[in-house]
Picture 1 (cartoon, rainbow, N blue to C red):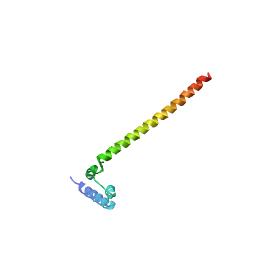
Picture 2: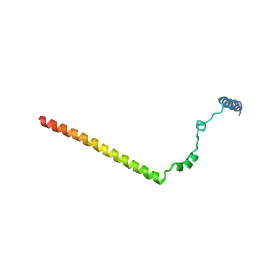
Picture 3: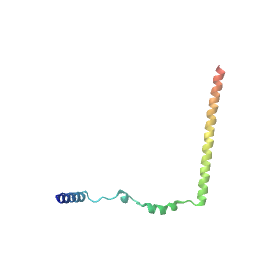
Picture 4: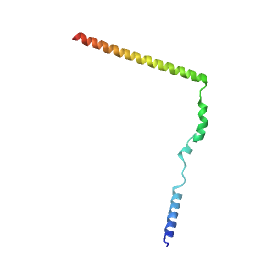
Length: 95
């Protein structure tokens, strides 16, 4: 039955010695400054909320930016179409 006992004992001793050689590892995420777990982040989620007045100002700012961007796009399109129209008229006058 048996010859397996000696080889398994030497295997276990070899594994133990190798684990002692590599030393203890420290986790990178725990060494970072400001380490937070998933659960501690959830409690901070509500701390960055805007007040209703700030939210209204933010909405107004977004509306104004969108309006400016739309007007700018329309002006660019109008200029482009005007230049194309003048080019077509010029080409038709040459024929």
